[in-house]
Image: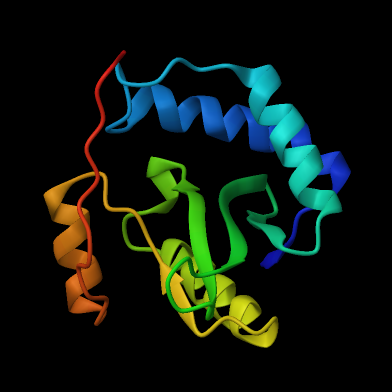
Length: 146
């Protein structure tokens, strides 16, 4: 089941965020700071233009998708921008959970007036998957430590 997150979900969301940093392509690039994740999640749950969805089964929450809505800098069109999309590895393979989170986020954003949905691709493999789903590459992001 996929649903909007609630305040009671914050500890598990923080845990999943930490797993995402430790296991994923951001490992070694970003420092995990659970207090920042906790604070940001609580703030997102209180805002009209921010949404956090969770995927759960009988064992509990195993995935999340957070996005914000904003008027695009150039066009003013309402745009949804992914902030985090994470599903525990054991629920990815052979399960539609990851894509269901995306589809639910897109549906939710569209209902709230978004005309576009932006995703980040932390690896070329993920970028290829987005292209297969008819997302267009419009920008590549680079980062370095200052």
